[in-house]
Length: 83
Ligand SMILES: CC(C)(COP(=O)(O)OP(=O)(O)OC[C@H]1O[C@@H](n2cnc3c(N)ncnc32)[C@H](O)[C@@H]1OP(=O)(O)O)[C@@H](O)C(=O)NCCC(=O)NCCS
Image (cartoon, rainbow, N blue to C red; front, side, top):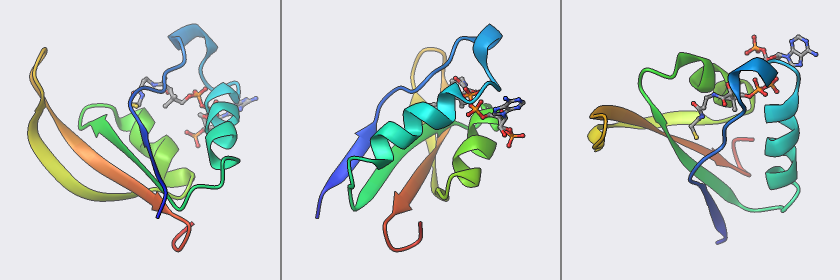
């Protein structure tokens, strides 16, 4: 099984909500992987909404995942099965 881990996907604040994030994600989805995995800070509610809208499921909370600044993370997964 092939899996992709997205370590960072960010759009500068003035350029958000213009479809750039969706376009970047589409490039990754076009790679045709079975499973895409990423972490999102629990405070990043916009990013969580974005990933849920694009078929990702929040499967787990990881306390203290980010060290500086200390923050918890959600683990999001999108598999070809639930996409
Ligand atoms: C998550 C993130 C990458 C999304 O990027 P983005 O470029 O804003 O994403 P999009 O523009 O494709 O979609 C975001 C919203 O804009 C809306 N949108 C897209 N094109 C639009 C347009 N032309 N006009 C108005 N709204 C539009 C989408 O429908 C979506 O709305 P919704 O959230 O209410 O459903 C961005 O918010 C970000 O960089 N966040 C900070 C970093 C982060 O937390 N990254 C995640 C950890 S890896």
